[in-house]
Length: 316
Image 1: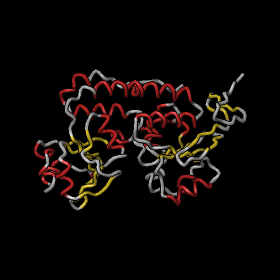
Image 2: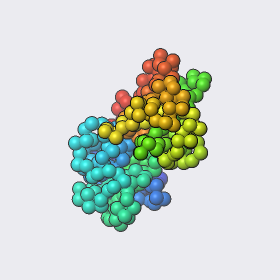
Image 3: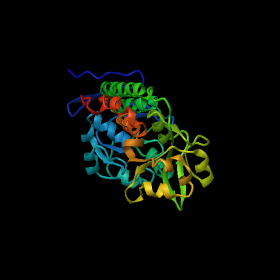
Image 4: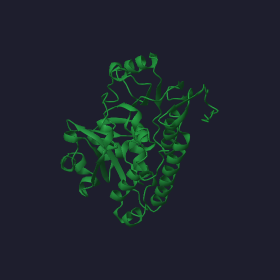
């Protein structure tokens, strides 16, 4: 006999079997647009957002993915799925053309016109909150797991990630003199786009034991040379973006950065974008790796930190 659980926040409307897994029809989740979205059949999923795709793979639901967005780069197998384009430049036709029974999209996906069409369609659309914090990361995993009626799998993954974050806090406690880090997304015509508060970059710097050199605004903004000099970054951090990647030499010869400790000490770090800023299951591992780059003396302790989320079996 197949038994389907009725969750307190769900409206169970019967049972069905999918891939040998008993699912409760009518699972309801509360999403980033403050809506209750009922999911009857998560058999064909379009995943928009690299972290969401990564979570779905970690929970063992890759076979249900019929499409992903261009930020879904991990695991490598995700790149073989049909691509609906960049998460902020979606077309409703591209998403709905894959005949999904569920769309899981990161908060901030767009444009608004596309999201409006998707919300009006009969296909359930869940907008997954992107809160850049330890709690926000764990909540993201729980929400995706609940949308799939796989709370036990999600509990397994959140437990592994929680353990990783606890180990990371122990490592971070060994930092005696935090370095000032400026995250630079790009240099456009010589002007830096830098991350302020309430960004993934700000939080990953903090998780790694650093201090964001920019604390006067929120989000990503173009800043002038005077602001760069005044920020006095010890390190410049960026992400790898193919031919558009910022490189160390460009930073070191920039007229403003040349007046900062970062250029004086030749301190430039570049990491893969989804790994560094994705806020998926590998975030603690990314923060550990960044911590080693910021504080080489911590390497012996950091190497003892083996992230559980990378090896946990939460697929059943």
